[in-house]
Length: 348
Length: 54
Image (tube, rainbow over all chains, first blue to last red; front, side, top):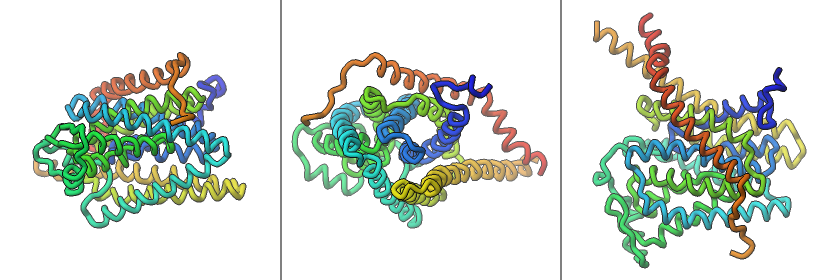
Protein backbone atom coordinates (compact mmCIF):
# COMPACT_ATOMS: atom_id res chain seq x y z
CA UNK A 1 0.00 0.00 0.00
CA UNK A 2 2.70 2.41 1.05
CA UNK A 3 4.79 1.62 -1.98
CA UNK A 4 1.87 2.66 -4.19
CA UNK A 5 2.14 6.09 -2.58
CA UNK A 6 5.73 6.47 -3.78
CA UNK A 7 5.42 9.62 -5.83
CA UNK A 8 8.34 11.55 -7.30
CA UNK A 9 10.45 8.50 -6.37
CA UNK A 10 10.29 9.39 -2.68
CA UNK A 11 8.90 7.39 0.25
CA UNK A 12 5.73 8.63 2.02
CA UNK A 13 7.69 8.88 5.29
CA UNK A 14 10.29 11.13 3.68
CA UNK A 15 7.58 13.27 2.09
CA UNK A 16 5.80 13.60 5.44
CA UNK A 17 9.11 14.66 7.01
CA UNK A 18 9.57 17.33 4.33
CA UNK A 19 5.98 18.58 4.71
CA UNK A 20 6.47 18.79 8.49
CA UNK A 21 9.84 20.50 8.18
CA UNK A 22 8.34 22.87 5.59
CA UNK A 23 5.56 23.72 8.03
CA UNK A 24 8.11 24.58 10.73
CA UNK A 25 10.26 26.63 8.34
CA UNK A 26 7.11 28.38 7.08
CA UNK A 27 6.06 29.39 10.62
CA UNK A 28 9.52 30.89 11.18
CA UNK A 29 9.51 32.67 7.81
CA UNK A 30 5.99 34.03 8.33
CA UNK A 31 6.79 35.23 11.84
CA UNK A 32 10.33 36.60 11.49
CA UNK A 33 10.28 37.40 7.77
CA UNK A 34 13.43 35.37 7.32
CA UNK A 35 14.84 31.98 8.17
CA UNK A 36 13.69 29.95 5.16
CA UNK A 37 16.40 28.15 3.34
CA UNK A 38 19.32 28.50 5.71
CA UNK A 39 17.78 25.66 7.68
CA UNK A 40 16.74 23.62 4.64
CA UNK A 41 20.10 23.39 2.83
CA UNK A 42 22.18 22.29 5.87
CA UNK A 43 19.47 19.77 6.79
CA UNK A 44 19.60 18.32 3.26
CA UNK A 45 23.41 18.23 3.39
CA UNK A 46 23.25 16.35 6.68
CA UNK A 47 20.68 13.95 5.19
CA UNK A 48 23.36 12.96 2.71
CA UNK A 49 22.19 14.77 -0.42
CA UNK A 50 24.86 16.03 -2.83
CA UNK A 51 25.89 19.64 -2.28
CA UNK A 52 24.46 20.72 -5.64
CA UNK A 53 21.10 19.02 -4.88
CA UNK A 54 20.97 20.46 -1.34
CA UNK A 55 21.77 23.98 -2.56
CA UNK A 56 19.70 23.74 -5.77
CA UNK A 57 16.61 22.35 -4.03
CA UNK A 58 17.04 24.87 -1.19
CA UNK A 59 17.07 27.62 -3.79
CA UNK A 60 14.00 26.24 -5.60
CA UNK A 61 12.21 26.14 -2.25
CA UNK A 62 13.13 29.80 -1.67
CA UNK A 63 11.80 30.62 -5.14
CA UNK A 64 8.40 29.04 -4.39
CA UNK A 65 8.18 30.70 -0.97
CA UNK A 66 9.06 34.10 -2.47
CA UNK A 67 6.36 33.78 -5.15
CA UNK A 68 3.73 33.26 -2.45
CA UNK A 69 5.00 36.14 -0.26
CA UNK A 70 5.37 38.54 -3.23
CA UNK A 71 1.76 37.97 -4.26
CA UNK A 72 0.76 39.16 -0.80
CA UNK A 73 3.10 42.20 -0.71
CA UNK A 74 2.14 43.24 -4.24
CA UNK A 75 -1.41 43.73 -2.98
CA UNK A 76 -0.04 46.03 -0.24
CA UNK A 77 1.91 48.23 -2.77
CA UNK A 78 5.26 47.61 -1.05
CA UNK A 79 7.41 46.87 -4.11
CA UNK A 80 9.86 49.36 -5.74
CA UNK A 81 10.21 47.93 -9.25
CA UNK A 82 13.08 50.27 -10.26
CA UNK A 83 15.16 49.17 -7.27
CA UNK A 84 14.11 45.60 -7.94
CA UNK A 85 15.30 45.74 -11.56
CA UNK A 86 18.80 46.97 -10.60
CA UNK A 87 19.00 44.45 -7.78
CA UNK A 88 18.03 41.65 -10.18
CA UNK A 89 20.86 42.55 -12.60
CA UNK A 90 23.53 42.63 -9.85
CA UNK A 91 22.21 39.55 -8.09
CA UNK A 92 22.06 37.48 -11.28
CA UNK A 93 25.79 37.95 -11.90
CA UNK A 94 26.53 37.28 -8.20
CA UNK A 95 24.47 34.07 -8.20
CA UNK A 96 26.21 32.82 -11.32
CA UNK A 97 29.65 33.41 -9.78
CA UNK A 98 28.53 31.68 -6.55
CA UNK A 99 26.99 28.74 -8.42
CA UNK A 100 30.11 28.29 -10.56
CA UNK A 101 32.15 28.26 -7.33
CA UNK A 102 29.99 25.41 -5.94
CA UNK A 103 30.51 23.23 -9.02
CA UNK A 104 34.23 24.07 -9.07
CA UNK A 105 34.57 23.11 -5.38
CA UNK A 106 32.50 19.97 -6.05
CA UNK A 107 35.01 18.93 -8.72
CA UNK A 108 37.75 19.37 -6.13
CA UNK A 109 35.66 17.38 -3.64
CA UNK A 110 35.57 20.32 -1.24
CA UNK A 111 32.02 21.66 -1.81
CA UNK A 112 30.28 20.03 1.17
CA UNK A 113 33.02 21.05 3.62
CA UNK A 114 33.43 24.64 2.41
CA UNK A 115 29.66 25.26 2.26
CA UNK A 116 29.22 23.82 5.76
CA UNK A 117 32.01 26.01 7.14
CA UNK A 118 30.48 29.08 5.43
CA UNK A 119 27.16 28.18 7.07
CA UNK A 120 28.77 27.83 10.49
CA UNK A 121 30.32 31.30 10.15
CA UNK A 122 27.17 32.86 8.72
CA UNK A 123 24.64 31.24 11.07
CA UNK A 124 26.93 31.81 14.05
CA UNK A 125 27.52 35.46 13.15
CA UNK A 126 23.88 36.30 12.46
CA UNK A 127 22.67 34.22 15.40
CA UNK A 128 25.05 36.05 17.75
CA UNK A 129 23.99 39.43 16.31
CA UNK A 130 20.24 38.70 16.62
CA UNK A 131 20.66 37.33 20.15
CA UNK A 132 22.75 40.35 21.25
CA UNK A 133 20.25 42.83 19.75
CA UNK A 134 17.30 40.95 21.28
CA UNK A 135 19.02 40.94 24.70
CA UNK A 136 19.63 44.69 24.37
CA UNK A 137 15.87 44.95 23.83
CA UNK A 138 15.87 46.96 20.62
CA UNK A 139 14.58 44.10 18.54
CA UNK A 140 17.34 43.40 16.04
CA UNK A 141 16.99 40.93 13.22
CA UNK A 142 14.01 39.88 11.18
CA UNK A 143 11.27 42.14 9.96
CA UNK A 144 9.98 44.89 12.21
CA UNK A 145 6.26 44.35 11.69
CA UNK A 146 5.29 47.60 13.43
CA UNK A 147 7.68 49.60 11.26
CA UNK A 148 6.26 47.84 8.22
CA UNK A 149 2.85 49.34 8.99
CA UNK A 150 4.16 52.95 9.14
CA UNK A 151 3.76 55.45 6.32
CA UNK A 152 6.87 55.67 4.09
CA UNK A 153 7.35 59.40 4.86
CA UNK A 154 7.45 58.62 8.61
CA UNK A 155 10.41 56.30 8.17
CA UNK A 156 13.78 57.67 9.22
CA UNK A 157 16.83 56.84 7.06
CA UNK A 158 19.66 55.30 9.16
CA UNK A 159 22.76 57.49 9.63
CA UNK A 160 24.99 54.97 7.81
CA UNK A 161 22.75 55.11 4.74
CA UNK A 162 22.70 58.93 4.81
CA UNK A 163 26.49 58.95 4.92
CA UNK A 164 26.73 56.53 1.97
CA UNK A 165 24.20 58.60 0.01
CA UNK A 166 26.27 61.75 0.65
CA UNK A 167 29.66 60.12 -0.04
CA UNK A 168 29.04 57.79 -3.00
CA UNK A 169 27.54 60.00 -5.70
CA UNK A 170 28.76 58.16 -8.81
CA UNK A 171 26.24 58.61 -11.63
CA UNK A 172 23.74 57.41 -12.55
CA UNK A 173 21.78 58.47 -9.46
CA UNK A 174 18.33 56.96 -8.97
CA UNK A 175 15.36 58.11 -6.89
CA UNK A 176 13.55 55.36 -5.04
CA UNK A 177 10.26 55.19 -3.18
CA UNK A 178 10.32 57.20 0.03
CA UNK A 179 12.35 59.96 -1.77
CA UNK A 180 15.62 58.08 -1.39
CA UNK A 181 18.32 59.22 -3.88
CA UNK A 182 21.26 56.88 -4.25
CA UNK A 183 23.94 55.86 -6.78
CA UNK A 184 22.97 52.88 -8.93
CA UNK A 185 26.48 51.50 -8.19
CA UNK A 186 25.72 51.20 -4.47
CA UNK A 187 22.63 49.16 -5.31
CA UNK A 188 24.63 47.02 -7.78
CA UNK A 189 27.37 46.33 -5.19
CA UNK A 190 24.82 45.27 -2.58
CA UNK A 191 23.05 43.12 -5.18
CA UNK A 192 26.25 41.39 -6.38
CA UNK A 193 27.48 40.56 -2.86
CA UNK A 194 24.17 39.12 -1.72
CA UNK A 195 23.75 37.29 -5.04
CA UNK A 196 27.15 35.69 -4.55
CA UNK A 197 26.05 34.36 -1.16
CA UNK A 198 22.75 33.20 -2.66
CA UNK A 199 24.43 31.23 -5.40
CA UNK A 200 27.04 29.77 -3.10
CA UNK A 201 24.82 28.79 -0.20
CA UNK A 202 21.45 28.32 -1.91
CA UNK A 203 19.82 30.87 0.37
CA UNK A 204 17.43 33.62 -0.63
CA UNK A 205 19.84 36.11 0.89
CA UNK A 206 17.00 38.13 2.40
CA UNK A 207 18.55 38.01 5.86
CA UNK A 208 21.59 39.83 4.45
CA UNK A 209 19.96 41.79 1.63
CA UNK A 210 17.19 43.32 3.74
CA UNK A 211 19.53 44.89 6.34
CA UNK A 212 21.84 45.87 3.43
CA UNK A 213 18.97 47.63 1.63
CA UNK A 214 17.95 49.41 4.83
CA UNK A 215 21.43 50.34 6.10
CA UNK A 216 23.46 50.69 2.87
CA UNK A 217 20.84 52.01 0.45
CA UNK A 218 18.50 53.68 2.96
CA UNK A 219 15.25 52.14 1.73
CA UNK A 220 12.23 52.28 4.09
CA UNK A 221 11.56 48.93 5.80
CA UNK A 222 8.26 48.09 4.04
CA UNK A 223 9.80 48.82 0.61
CA UNK A 224 12.88 46.76 1.51
CA UNK A 225 10.66 43.82 2.46
CA UNK A 226 8.44 43.98 -0.64
CA UNK A 227 11.27 44.65 -3.11
CA UNK A 228 13.42 41.95 -1.57
CA UNK A 229 10.69 39.38 -2.11
CA UNK A 230 10.10 40.57 -5.69
CA UNK A 231 13.82 40.24 -6.31
CA UNK A 232 14.00 36.77 -4.76
CA UNK A 233 11.35 35.56 -7.21
CA UNK A 234 13.72 36.40 -10.07
CA UNK A 235 17.03 35.48 -8.45
CA UNK A 236 15.56 32.29 -6.98
CA UNK A 237 13.92 31.44 -10.31
CA UNK A 238 17.12 31.96 -12.31
CA UNK A 239 19.25 30.18 -9.71
CA UNK A 240 16.82 27.25 -9.60
CA UNK A 241 16.80 27.06 -13.40
CA UNK A 242 20.60 26.97 -13.54
CA UNK A 243 20.80 24.34 -10.79
CA UNK A 244 17.92 22.47 -12.47
CA UNK A 245 19.91 22.24 -15.70
CA UNK A 246 22.66 20.50 -13.76
CA UNK A 247 20.14 18.13 -12.12
CA UNK A 248 20.37 20.01 -8.81
CA UNK A 249 16.62 20.58 -8.24
CA UNK A 250 14.72 17.62 -6.79
CA UNK A 251 10.94 18.09 -6.98
CA UNK A 252 10.50 15.27 -4.45
CA UNK A 253 12.17 17.61 -1.92
CA UNK A 254 10.82 20.99 -3.05
CA UNK A 255 7.12 20.13 -3.57
CA UNK A 256 6.40 18.74 -0.06
CA UNK A 257 8.56 21.43 1.60
CA UNK A 258 6.58 24.14 -0.19
CA UNK A 259 3.27 22.44 0.63
CA UNK A 260 4.08 22.64 4.34
CA UNK A 261 5.77 26.04 4.34
CA UNK A 262 2.90 27.84 2.54
CA UNK A 263 0.59 26.83 5.38
CA UNK A 264 3.22 27.53 8.05
CA UNK A 265 3.86 31.02 6.66
CA UNK A 266 0.18 31.89 7.06
CA UNK A 267 0.26 30.70 10.68
CA UNK A 268 3.50 32.60 11.39
CA UNK A 269 2.25 35.75 9.68
CA UNK A 270 -1.05 35.66 11.62
CA UNK A 271 0.91 35.14 14.86
CA UNK A 272 2.72 38.48 14.39
CA UNK A 273 -0.60 40.28 15.02
CA UNK A 274 -0.91 38.56 18.41
CA UNK A 275 2.59 38.03 19.79
CA UNK A 276 5.36 40.58 20.30
CA UNK A 277 8.19 39.21 18.19
CA UNK A 278 10.92 40.86 20.32
CA UNK A 279 10.31 38.35 23.11
CA UNK A 280 10.83 35.42 20.77
CA UNK A 281 13.74 36.85 18.76
CA UNK A 282 16.14 35.71 21.46
CA UNK A 283 15.02 32.11 20.78
CA UNK A 284 15.43 32.75 17.07
CA UNK A 285 19.02 33.86 17.68
CA UNK A 286 19.51 30.77 19.82
CA UNK A 287 18.08 28.61 17.05
CA UNK A 288 20.56 30.03 14.52
CA UNK A 289 23.42 29.39 16.93
CA UNK A 290 22.15 25.84 17.47
CA UNK A 291 22.02 25.48 13.68
CA UNK A 292 25.66 26.58 13.44
CA UNK A 293 26.67 24.05 16.12
CA UNK A 294 24.58 21.36 14.39
CA UNK A 295 26.26 21.90 11.03
CA UNK A 296 29.64 21.81 12.81
CA UNK A 297 28.77 18.54 14.61
CA UNK A 298 27.45 17.01 11.38
CA UNK A 299 30.61 17.97 9.52
CA UNK A 300 32.87 16.55 12.23
CA UNK A 301 30.75 13.36 12.17
CA UNK A 302 31.07 13.17 8.39
CA UNK A 303 34.84 13.72 8.60
CA UNK A 304 35.25 11.05 11.27
CA UNK A 305 32.76 8.75 9.54
CA UNK A 306 30.68 8.79 12.74
CA UNK A 307 27.02 8.33 11.79
CA UNK A 308 25.83 9.10 15.32
CA UNK A 309 27.36 12.59 15.20
CA UNK A 310 25.85 13.20 11.76
CA UNK A 311 22.40 12.18 13.07
CA UNK A 312 22.88 14.32 16.19
CA UNK A 313 23.60 17.33 13.97
CA UNK A 314 20.47 16.71 11.90
CA UNK A 315 18.29 16.24 15.01
CA UNK A 316 19.71 19.45 16.50
CA UNK A 317 19.06 21.60 13.42
CA UNK A 318 15.50 20.28 12.94
CA UNK A 319 14.82 20.13 16.69
CA UNK A 320 15.83 23.75 17.33
CA UNK A 321 13.58 24.93 14.49
CA UNK A 322 10.68 22.84 15.83
CA UNK A 323 11.16 24.27 19.34
CA UNK A 324 11.10 27.91 18.16
CA UNK A 325 8.14 27.34 15.80
CA UNK A 326 6.34 25.50 18.62
CA UNK A 327 7.04 28.41 20.99
CA UNK A 328 5.49 30.83 18.48
CA UNK A 329 2.33 28.76 18.04
CA UNK A 330 2.01 28.04 21.77
CA UNK A 331 2.52 31.70 22.76
CA UNK A 332 0.00 32.81 20.14
CA UNK A 333 -2.71 30.42 21.31
CA UNK A 334 -1.98 31.24 24.98
CA UNK A 335 -2.18 35.00 24.26
CA UNK A 336 -5.46 34.59 22.39
CA UNK A 337 -6.94 32.52 25.22
CA UNK A 338 -5.82 35.08 27.81
CA UNK A 339 -7.39 37.88 25.76
CA UNK A 340 -10.62 35.90 25.43
CA UNK A 341 -10.70 35.26 29.22
CA UNK A 342 -10.28 38.98 29.92
CA UNK A 343 -13.03 39.84 27.46
CA UNK A 344 -15.53 37.23 28.69
CA UNK A 345 -16.15 38.65 32.25
CA UNK A 346 -16.28 42.17 30.79
CA UNK A 347 -18.96 41.02 28.38
CA UNK A 348 -20.93 39.48 31.26
CA UNK B 1 33.64 36.00 -16.01
CA UNK B 2 35.27 33.27 -18.11
CA UNK B 3 34.00 29.78 -17.46
CA UNK B 4 30.61 30.90 -16.23
CA UNK B 5 27.61 29.11 -17.69
CA UNK B 6 25.06 31.10 -19.69
CA UNK B 7 21.46 29.96 -19.18
CA UNK B 8 20.33 28.09 -22.27
CA UNK B 9 16.80 27.03 -23.15
CA UNK B 10 15.99 23.66 -21.62
CA UNK B 11 12.29 22.68 -21.84
CA UNK B 12 12.60 20.00 -19.15
CA UNK B 13 14.11 22.41 -16.59
CA UNK B 14 11.63 25.12 -17.59
CA UNK B 15 8.82 22.63 -16.92
CA UNK B 16 10.35 21.79 -13.53
CA UNK B 17 10.60 25.44 -12.46
CA UNK B 18 7.16 26.10 -13.97
CA UNK B 19 5.74 23.28 -11.83
CA UNK B 20 7.15 24.92 -8.68
CA UNK B 21 5.72 28.31 -9.76
CA UNK B 22 2.35 26.68 -10.44
CA UNK B 23 2.37 24.91 -7.08
CA UNK B 24 3.19 28.19 -5.30
CA UNK B 25 0.28 30.02 -6.97
CA UNK B 26 -2.13 27.14 -6.29
CA UNK B 27 -1.02 27.04 -2.63
CA UNK B 28 -1.42 30.84 -2.26
CA UNK B 29 -4.96 30.73 -3.66
CA UNK B 30 -5.87 27.41 -2.03
CA UNK B 31 -4.64 28.18 1.50
CA UNK B 32 -6.15 31.69 1.20
CA UNK B 33 -9.54 30.19 0.47
CA UNK B 34 -9.08 27.56 3.18
CA UNK B 35 -8.18 30.27 5.70
CA UNK B 36 -11.39 32.16 4.94
CA UNK B 37 -13.56 29.05 5.17
CA UNK B 38 -11.97 27.11 8.04
CA UNK B 39 -10.06 29.92 9.84
CA UNK B 40 -12.85 31.31 12.08
CA UNK B 41 -14.03 27.83 13.14
CA UNK B 42 -10.47 26.73 13.86
CA UNK B 43 -9.88 29.86 15.98
CA UNK B 44 -13.09 29.16 17.92
CA UNK B 45 -11.92 25.62 18.50
CA UNK B 46 -8.45 26.69 19.67
CA UNK B 47 -9.36 29.78 21.66
CA UNK B 48 -13.07 29.66 22.37
CA UNK B 49 -13.27 26.18 23.90
CA UNK B 50 -11.24 26.89 27.03
CA UNK B 51 -12.65 30.36 27.46
CA UNK B 52 -16.12 28.85 27.60
CA UNK B 53 -15.05 26.40 30.28
CA UNK B 54 -13.53 29.07 32.51
